[in-house]
Image 1 (cartoon, rainbow, N blue to C red):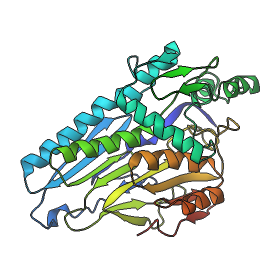
Image 2 (image 1 turned 180 degrees about the vertical axis):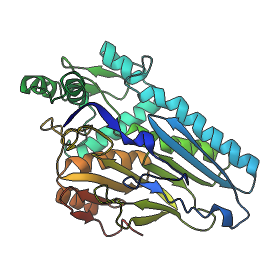
Image 3 (image 1 turned 135 degrees about the vertical axis):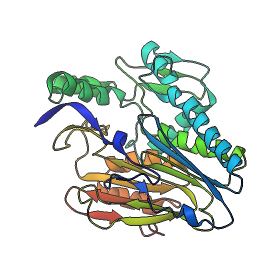
Length: 338
C-alpha cells in the first residue's frame, strides 16, 4: 500500500520523562532519577516543538533560577538558529541559496556547518553529501503527486544535479541546473551543540538536550551519567541497550522517521551514488564528541553497508556505533555501550 504523504514519527515522540515514549526511537530513559539528585541540584525541564520535532531540555543546578535561565538560553539559541538551515523557510539562508543560486557573506554558523559537512563528505567517500536535495525532493514530490517513486528520467535528472553546490569558505553557489543544498543531516545536531553552549554560557554545568533522537550532554546527572535507552525499531518490545553519557553526544538515523511507503523502501535518506534509499538498515546510532558530528555520521553510516559502517567507526578514534538491519542483524562497535 502506498501512502501519499511522508510519515514523521518524530512529531509523536514523548521525551524527557513524558509517558508513552516511542520505544523504537532513542530516548532519554523516563527513569531519570531527578527526585534523588545529589549535590543539592534542582531540575529545570521543558519540551517544545522545534525543527519539526519535540526538543527536550533538562538543566540541573543548585540554583533553580540559574537552571531556568540556562534552559531559556538554550531554547533561545536553538530557536534563533533553526530558520537559518531550514530550506523551506522563505528567509532562511539555505532557502535563499536554493532559490537564487548564490549566497555571499555567509553567517558564521552556516560556515561552520558547511566546513564540517565537507570534512564528513570527504571522510566517508561521499556517503554524506549535502547536495542530495534534488534527489530527496524528487522522491517526496513524486509520492505526494502520484503515490509512486519518481520515473527513471526524473531520478536521472536529479542525479545529474548532484555535486552542484560550491563552497569556497566565504560564499555558496549552485553550479548545476536543478542543484540544491540540504543540511538536514547535520544541522539539527549542530543546533543541539549550540543549545548546550548557550546553557554553559549562563553558568550551567549539567545539561541534556534531546532533539528527536539527537542527544547532547554537558556534564553529568548530579554525580551519575545520563542514561539513554536505544531499542531496535523492528523489535520495540525487546530489551533496550542503555548507554551512559557524561560528555559528548549520540544521534540516530532511521528509516522509520520519514518514509513514503508501508515497506519503508523509500524514505528521507538517499544514497548519493544511486538516488535510492539504502535498504539493509533500519537504524544507525553514532556516538561522537559533538551532536553535529554524530548527526552527520549517522546519516553517512546509514548509506554504507552495515559491515562497512562498523569498520569505518571502529577505525576512527572517538567514534562508536550501533546498527540494526531489517534482517534482524545487529552491528556494534566495542565501546558503544560504556
